[in-house]
Image 1 (tube, rainbow, N blue to C red):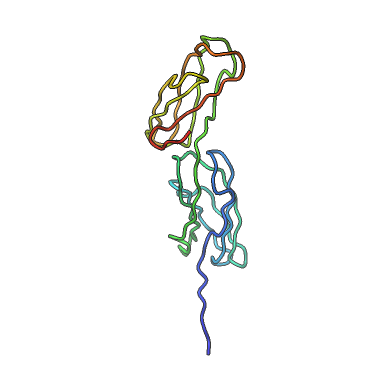
Image 2: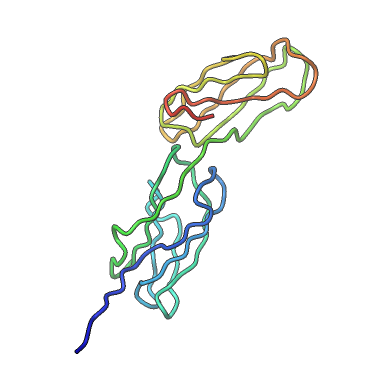
Length: 172
């Protein structure tokens, strides 16, 4: 009496499971055809990288998170010739980040430019600067990125925190 077991492909590990645009993520998968080229699909990016499976149908690969909107997005590994793995997904959570601030010091009256990404698409952003709430407002592009400019107001001497707050996603 025989029993048949069907191995289903999967991405069984995503490390880390959350991060910001520009960070590295490593994925491990198994259950694919041996020595097959895979297309790794990350959210809206149809082919963020490719990888050939090992002789046992497993793979390990890393890639850099590209610009996408805040939240949970899918990761898929699909056989380029067989289509094996289509619809089998794991997830990754994109977090927001201020990626650019210039200058990084100066007196009252200094103009500051900041850029952020990983926020919601076309989301209103409130920028707080030290004790000043909503020193400037901005709206993200469709990819969740924004640029804002403001002038340093009267603050105490020392380090001053800049925070970008997504008003729809309620993230900072």
